[in-house]
Amino acid sequence: MYKHILFATDLTEDTEYLLHKVRHICSLTNAKLSLIHVVEPLPGYSYAYLGIEDIEGQLIAEARQSIEKLGGQLNVTKNDQFTEVGPTKIKILKVADEIGADLIVCGSHGRHGLSLLLGSTANAILHGAKCDVLTVRLPEEQ
Image (tube, rainbow, N blue to C red; front, side, top):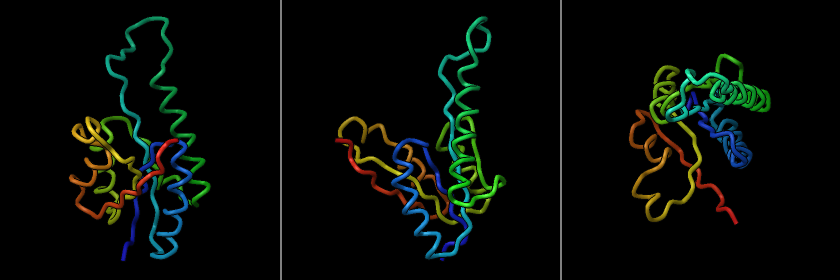
């Protein structure tokens, strides 16, 4: 069974829904758990503009705080908490390989129409991973 699970989270309100599933899988498998959140670089953002706050830096700092809080809830050590900056799919797959994850857990919204054609992060992870991927269907927004 699984020995090392990587929980990829976007740190939205859906994280709470996924937490219950991740906890349950870990209790069934007795697997080690790691967490990852990826901050996508802001398009066209440059530090060259004087007088503009470091928005990207603030996003990264907030993400690190949120991952640390989540790690506390799940008893995940700081060494197993990852906050990366870059393309989400690439960073998640890279960390999964580096830590030897044998399962990646992420959430997925049901996609229809144009969203389905353009793909999703969960779909990109599923097709690029060298390990198993569990995509948890998230509840639809009302």
